Amino acid sequence: MHQKKAMVTFPLRSGILRAMPAPSKRKPTADPRLALRAVTVDNPFYSRAHAGDPTNPKRINAVVNIRESAITMLASRNKIDAAQVAAATKFRALFAWAGIRR
Image 1: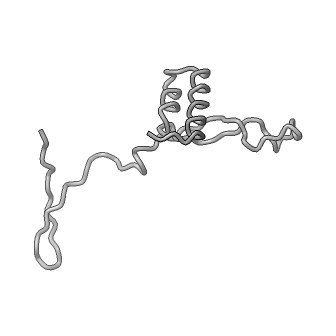
Image 2: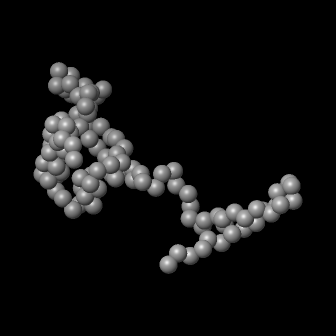
Image 3: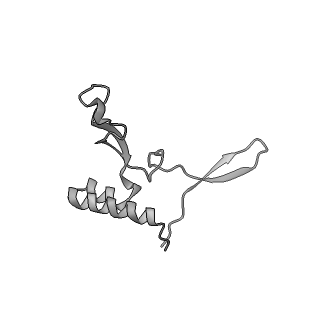
């Protein structure tokens, strides 16, 4: 059953009243599909030749959208362990590399 939205009328300069939906009580968000989380990941620019150098860390902080894939969503909720995440990520990369279409 659909409920009708409350309508609010606003006077226009021409004297005609115009019905518009009442404002929502929910706070607007930038994008409700995004769920960003700070994580520590392997540095993609890490070089073993400069190991130990403070400007060449092995791991760095990054911001990740956990809703980007089901794998990251399940991992963020601790539903799968690290080995399952690694296997799923490798499978996903191989699947994308193979270019398999549905």
